Length: 341
Length: 90
Ligand code: SF4
Ligand code: SF4
Image 1 (cartoon, each protein chain N blue to C red):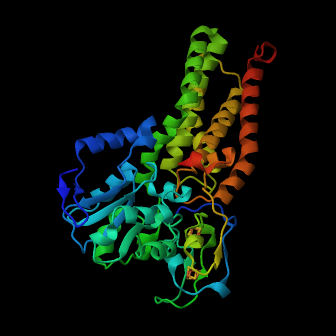
Image 2: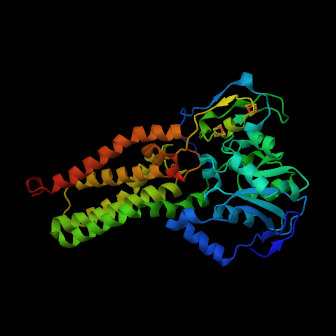
Image 3: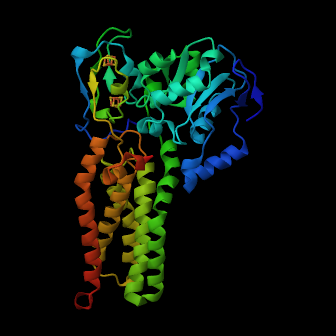
């Protein structure tokens, strides 16, 4: 906030397109932290730079990342920003959940007295809010015409210059490397609650477990980390290049890829004396777990349908379980004194 | 890089051309260019060009003024399939 803007509806808090260090630090924390859901902007009206009665009105969610992302892209542009109460959830998710919806929008238009604020009767609503916002309903109940703006806030200046016309490219939701990469910490952090205890137990076991079982526990810990690396780091990063369309398949391939160096180094150290069955067990375990973890990324991706994910879970689930069970059995069998000799 | 594509032949999207008024709203709201039209101006019926790109977000169905589109709306998220609750995804 940098001061206030006088307007026909009273003083409106003013923001600029520059993010301060506080905003940036907050962004970093919110990306990773457990407080991801409570990073809110007060709903209501904001003045970006020095808007007047003819300036455009842009609608945003009250998730601070959505709001910051929007204003950062609007350097040198005077506009009103109407922030809806979406419970601190981003535009797309809020539209799906209904909080970025027609009723909420109409109410906020009235509460913020937008009809008295501007001369025109147009609102620019993010295109990704369209699953929640029914443009006709909003017009009927508020008198404002809804124009769906571009998918990416970065295209807003060009859209405004073109007289609020979006090119077909602006209407498409892509999923570039940069957007996939920022999601990785969120995915990994979500797993810490089961990953950390498991790693600690394996660490303890490798310390106390003696030669056979201690080595197994250390390898298990390494395998877990490799599966997370494959399923939740490499799969998002290499998404377009991993084979297949199903995330489960992509994750499995990534899992097998990371297993290769592990097996090669195990093979090169005869001192480890790994049973031969391990060379089948580890690919099964790491591939299976990576495949399962990769399926989790369907939720963060921008192009998967519920019908598709349901099909994928049904098809891949049994294979993932089978790979896990077979892998564990092979590890044990290879270490039984009878065969292990 | 080519477009990322998900499983083919699964979308529940259905289009009823006889109901379409050619308002082009669906062309504006769809984030995956599923609909297409040969001309720039309003008034001509659209058609489904790339059904397999549909992610079942429901933006088109929600904004079509004539009910020419139906789709079973959902969030494409494995957590939702496991828990039966789409809220767990966002
Ligand atoms: S929104 Fe409905 S009526 Fe309008 S062009 Fe699309 S299908 Fe036709
Ligand atoms: S449901 Fe969404 S992705 Fe599918 S056609 Fe409609 S707007 Fe496009």
